[in-house]
Amino acid sequence: MQQVLIGTILSISAVFMVLTILIVAHKAWREARNGMHGRRRKELEPKVLTWAHSDEKTVRKALDGQPSPSDLIVLEQILLDHIQRVRGIERERLATAMDQLGLVEEYLKGLESGRWWRRAESAEKLGLAASKRAIQPLSRALDDEMPEVRLRAAKALGQLGGKASARKLVRALNEPNRWSTIRVADILIGMGHEVIEAVIEAFPTLTREGQLAVLDIIGRIRPVSAGPWLIEKLYDRTTDVRARACHALGNIGDPNVAPELIAALRDPEWPVRAMAAKALGRVGAAEAIPQLTSSLRDQQWWVRHNAARALRAIGPAGLEALERLVADGDTFAREQAILILEEAGRMDERAGELVEAGSLRDAARSLLEKIVAGGTTGRLRVLAREHPVEEVRRELLAMLPEEVSS
Image (tube, rainbow, N blue to C red; front, top):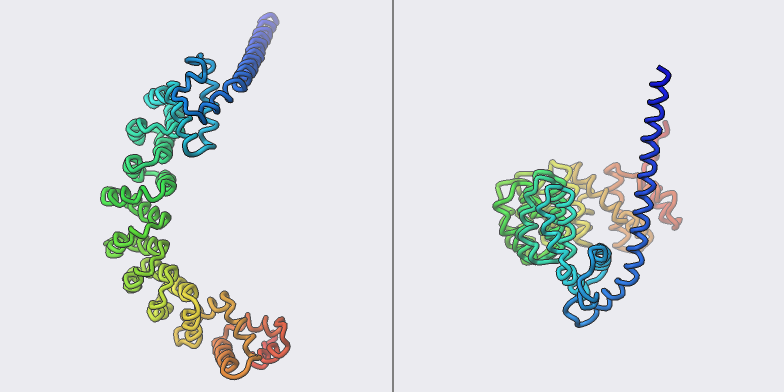
């Protein structure tokens, strides 16, 4: 029994010793390889960068022929590092070098690999290589069984740019995973105005989530040309589509759409009314003041809140409309108006006017008395204690009811 135990211990010790030797040998080999690659990089990098700024067509000439497999590994790292830092002609030249050295072909083969991580890595590198012939293979990769491959292929298509890439990429908005849809939408937004035609064209074929993403994309890119199309969506049968269309119109900021947004304030669904109110503030539609004033009496808090903020955003005329509401018979409208006036500093401004002469003083006193009558006195009591002008403090103290001590 003792001999068996000793034999077992010796066997385990031998295994650990072999593993230790293998680990040390592998680390030594890796460090030696990295050192060799580092030395070769110092030699090859200046040649590649000099070629990138020259008129020479073939990179192999600058490298004295076809590089060895070991040098190709170093060259790939050099090209991938620099291609992410430069723009314009230099980037195009480095992308051309990757194609001439056969790297693009290797990445295209990698998209067909049975290992998903190699497919994902190849898709990412094709985006950096900026090879237009990768558009079709990357488009097929959008249907890959692995989500990571699909997302990297989508990102690569975004880097390639162009309307062809945009059309291929838009269908990825149908991804069942919400976070994937958001990431694809961000890629399309990064491509800018060139995707607008593609997303509008694809809209009818997309899922509900994809359609909402399209509206968000347009709202983020803000093309004025999309205004008429968005106005059509204000009459869509889906509440979310109508609401997102209002939001996108507000982001674009074209004041010419104000009549359609004013009409949307009468929508039967409150999310649409809320987004229409917010959009009217963003486009600065002074003609919407009467309708926004009425929206402060809406039964839904978000509609009231957005309408009040829209009036503030419109400017002096909107603030005057809010002042008229401080004595409104609707409690909700009154509270929202006073809240926004306080946030806008209008209450402080009016308090300072108590020491002015004539109609300005009378208007300030009238407004503040209405606020006091409404029972919202928190800010006024702070001003009565802390305002730098003693006369203002006296006026406010005389106006405010005495606090009841408990």
